[in-house]
Image (cartoon, rainbow, N blue to C red; front, side, top):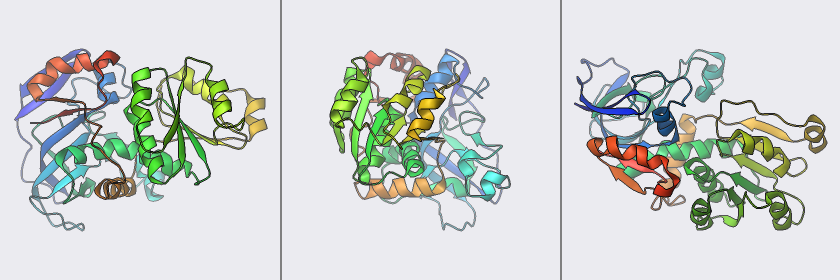
Length: 339
């Protein structure tokens, strides 16, 4: 079968590999990969900047698939069903799993990061990690995992209708936060250093203002909020400098959610932290409930996926095209690979 392998940082290869072994374990399904979304973690892996990833590695965790073989299962999944894949493989036994926090399992393995992912024609996955839809297209199914990141962050922050949200960093992950926030009707401010991204964000439902972070952002935020500042801030910048600065963007008594991940230390000035009595939390991956919620939102058109996919590639084309998507000038928001 065709397989895209990241042999080492900066070197992708298209290889012929053996299909998955059979027969299948009772709790697994064999699926045909129809679409693979390319995300920021894949690009970081290409650059050699992804924590927890070893080489060689088959990337790909944003998957839209068709079921080819499956045994008896509680969800009633059948051969021919199409589904999104929940790529977070959890143990089911640790304290986090026992409390329903499967997204932060103590021994979590993510497809395409800790173990080989879906940039191949066929893959075996646990049956309970398949989330079906009879309405969504293969493209939309592959977008579900991306949208889950934002949905889980919003579920963590639990904004009220009278909250005013600031989303810092409106790349693909920041846009998923905006999409889920807009679905519950809150007012959203988008902030970035990239004018093209701000222009895109301005057209998204729920976004009332955009802020260029290069031009006195605190003053802009104060003017927009009549001096109050945003009551919730979601940082998806992937920048330690932006994350450190985000503490100053928050209203008194507000909530700060770190969605983006960096390998640096994040620091804050304790007296100001206490003065505002702010809540600070992280958001990681998502749960089965988030997958179901996102599928429902897309099926009902509460989230419009039409503008998301900006680039496409076959496996052979991906080898040459992926490095070009690293350049902001490429305008790549979301690239989709299909076999």
